[in-house]
Image (cartoon, rainbow, N blue to C red; front, side, top):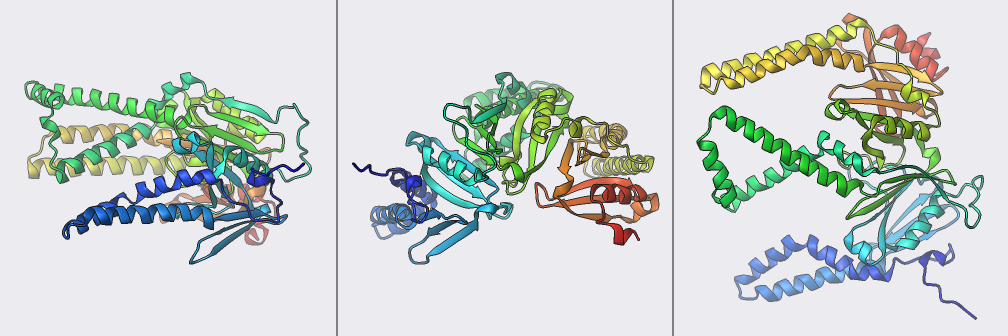
Length: 501
């Protein structure tokens, strides 16, 4: 009795595997969506000869054919040493990556994917996507095949045997608490979304000549503002703006992080799954995770919140404010974030130990820069008031920046700190966004010392740990020069010996 093999991963490794045939229902639709501007251009160009509809249909058929052709021309296989992807018809391209270079496996599924039980798999091999160079992409595997492929690529180490049947394969580290949505308004995501919507509305108003102020509700609001004082108008606009930003941030938080789970596989890898409409699952190989970062934006820090990010090689670090696959925990109570960081690092000390303070010269530098900058800005606005006759309220508002300059400088100074704890190099920096990073000393491949003219006058330097993971550079700003050499030598023994001599 023979059984037909329907799962592409059940085929022997020596054979090329196809994507799921169900992708034939998705890719033509996706390609049509991407080609809408070009198809509209064909319709307009063909209308002059009376054949606009025919040209539009021909263009649509070509786009659909190209979408179908992707299934026939895409193959992949996994050998004992490599994963290989082959695609293209006229220009055949084969991409190969050693299996020991696989860092992460990112599985996403939008609504069309989920309706057909499919997923898109992005295999990270250590290349940052900041310049658009992602990993190997397999768009159109079944959900089951994608899950099995993830295990096949990440759990190759025989020192981590597969769990026995019936045993739990994953240990849950954290799960989203719906009450954490209250932290969403204190992030910048709502402001960014609101600015994007306002920009779109402005372009629509200018190019399509759609006057939103003539719409019923907006016209009523405009007329009401005309009959109130300017001070009340400003207050009303600020309240409305805060409400809109808060609503946008809350919706964005729910869409991005609903169903969030952070788990650890018995094979050692970390799995992050999240998403309401578009689901996403990111897997990070344990040996590629070399640290964690606790990020505390100013508003989020004021309400006792924070978020946790992974420092690992091969992650997609150039996608959005949340840094894509780096998120180990979305905005949540700081105590929960500290607990997750401790679990990920295997020690609570790197993120909880008191850090070494920086010299007072670092405080003076921040005071001088902050006060000088705010005073200069106030002088500029004062000149504009005198020369152009704009409202003096602009100058009064700039004086508020001068009043905030000193507290901001002190807060930036208090944020500075460094330490070496349990083999991790810990640095902290920032005020508007305070970041405390714990980086494994073994992941550091070099140290950079840089000093500006004013730093040299103050006996300070900026020490930068370079690594292949995360942002690839972690700064210890305004540390005393002698302390910088001792700190780098303690973190990487012997590396600086010849330079210190």
